[in-house]
Length: 103
Image (cartoon, rainbow, N blue to C red; front, side, top):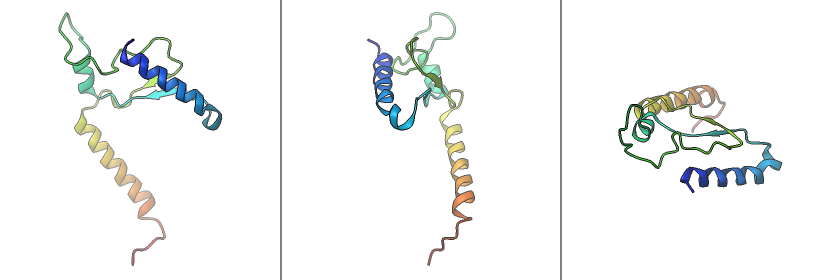
């Protein structure tokens, strides 16, 4: 059994347990980054893959969920910049406009 198969099996089992409380889980979001894709998939010819433990292109075909990989085409630094920008946005939106004051 491939690691991806085990992962999906455990995930789907837990999703079934939580369905009554949270509803169905239709999507599996993964944090695959572009370096993971480069290291895991041979795009041209018979080149060897560097790493085979990533779930890039190796998920089972009979999954009950759709895979969402919003970071798949980004490098780590690009992700970090977006996280910082997101946190700044949250801070300006919620913290700076709150009625809380620090004494």
